[in-house]
Image (cartoon, rainbow, N blue to C red; front, side, top):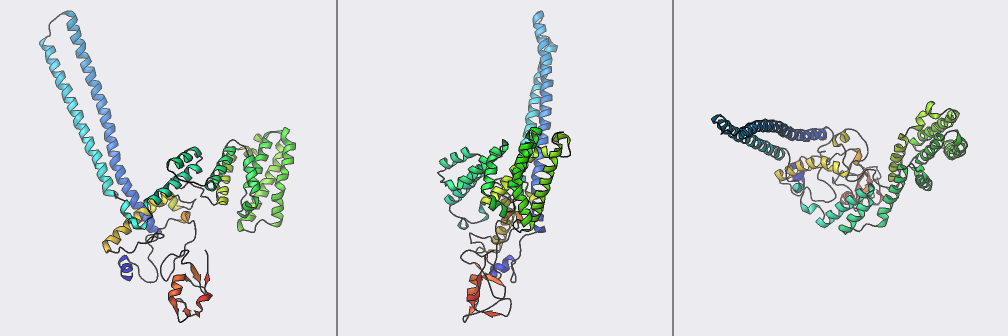
Length: 456
């Protein structure tokens, strides 16, 4: 293993990060430059198509006009009963030669376009690897049937998440994919509530928020408050006739005021969240003063903004997915890739992650083949190098043993020593000597049984 590490540039107790930070951005710039090269060739072809089309149309129109004039002259001579003159015969011969020359010129120009199109293909072959399936050996992945099942499940989840329930059911039947009702139920419920919100029906969402109140509070979610706030605003939009009903409905805000008095959950964000709720309550109570004059002409006209409905849909989707352990984004959705690399937003989807990881894996494959280090990548649950995808792809914490330089797993969990250093269980077992364990990073000796299994 040492020879393989040295061949790949791995030295000392740490594995070289390859590539991360600025290196990843440099790689992204290189890939974008490759795309730009292909795009330039494609622009040339499109420009030639445009020029050829304009030239072809103009030439054919002129030719039709010329032939039309000649036809009129021949028809006039036929009506007069005069024989075909030598001049008309010469004009007809010239017309035939002109038609032949124009057709040959258009055909020649069309052949030039074919050569330009072929240059686009050559540019693609020159800038991109035509065979990406060989990035890793088949032994690393599961069977083809397992891969197809995972892909089909991802597509079905995407369809459920997009509300295409009938399409998802049809795909399950055609692919003989068995999807449990427990898997479908969260998506069915979320889509039902979202459809009601799109129709400005707050009832199902309020019922769901009340039934999950405690868990939403633990997430510092203000979903229930925002739903009550939106219903209160709908009553305000009804004018003075709805004033008494609005005042009566304002009692739903009392629990949030009580939470502020005794504190919410104690999380850092909870105090700001409660303060924001109290400010919103004050604004809504203040708007009652202008109810008879019309809120649309008052300082509280922003309460009637229609964007509140789009906002509540986004809030419900985000909080409901967090509560149910689902990703907010579809596993197949495609977003702007390079802008995501530069700023932390929501989770990366698998497609964007693959776009980032594939060039790096192709580079390491070339290095492995060149240095003949075929045993470096043989595990299904880890990559031979670290690929920095950003915070958006951190679905869970990962710990790599500093001794064995392997990612810990359920069968080889991280162990915390008495001195505070953390190593893997396999490393701990290898370091035991005479029933004692000496920490590899400090001189403390300890009993191996005193190590504690930790969970990140």
